Image 1: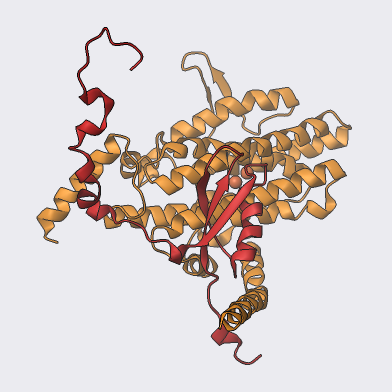
Image 2 (image 1 turned 180 degrees about the horizontal axis):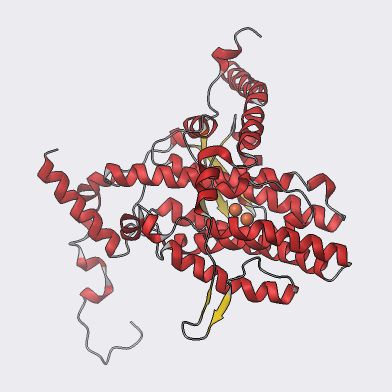
Length: 100
Length: 318
Ligand SMILES: [Fe+2]
Ligand SMILES: [Fe+2]
């Protein structure tokens, strides 16, 4: 294999999500490098669930995640902050009204 | 960005940390914060990885199956710690390969304690008890550090460390309850690991350059000297239970301060080892570099296989 050098590329990065037990959502646990998704799953088991921390694992190549940009948090999230009428406390009811 | 704008951002940033808010990878951060974290976190990761070597030395020679599975699990945990920390560091924009390159070229440091040899089985006990013990003292405050990925990694690490220390102490306890020769072996290990363990908590406060900034960023909550005192205060009674003697003639309980007074640490030795002149610096790095280079063909083959499989899928889809 004379083109060995050319091959030298870093294994891609995968993000790892683990469901701790049924009834809970998958949660981001961390990341790892692997040659492919299959290997990423196996490595995720060894790196992140050595003590029964999970019953289900998702891996996704990091480059496939589109993330929001914190510098644009204003445009992104502020529209929700002046909509107090989305919360129950916005509505004035007399104290006599129970169970509401 | 103008200088004034940067200054403004820095103030907002520092205030955020002071309010105990976390910094996440894509948030704006001062360049110095990024650099300091890359340095500290990668050094921490390197220490976990190189730390496997002295203990790995005894896996095949552990005295029983019980000891062997425990040691194997501990060393595997240390690999895991290294991996959590490397991936947390990568979120700051440095690649894994770059970090390896820095370690292998000697540009990056790792904890100098791992440059001491493990010559008897008792050393494995002493490492778990003292070295993991000192590591826990260093690491627990980091669970609340300001950089989110570092703090989260440390929570996982700390959960796993207590088994490490307990398995080490149990080894010491068994030796100390054994034959005279076994007890001597335990004493000898304590003699050799005690002072390097104290050094592990870092240079004295007056010689430590980073403390003030590190406190602000919550990379540190207590000073090196405070951590060292805490380590001594909790470890000496554990040595008493083992019935072995801490190799320090000046060690004495001080009724007034409520702490142990202790003797002078040989900082020349510490700096010698940091600079590469410890008993095993060369051997450790050689082993690391060999493992990396001899594994290159495996990484390449796995990548070639993955590419081939991906090609196949594309062709089938067409
Ligand atoms: Fe560790
Ligand atoms: Fe450990």
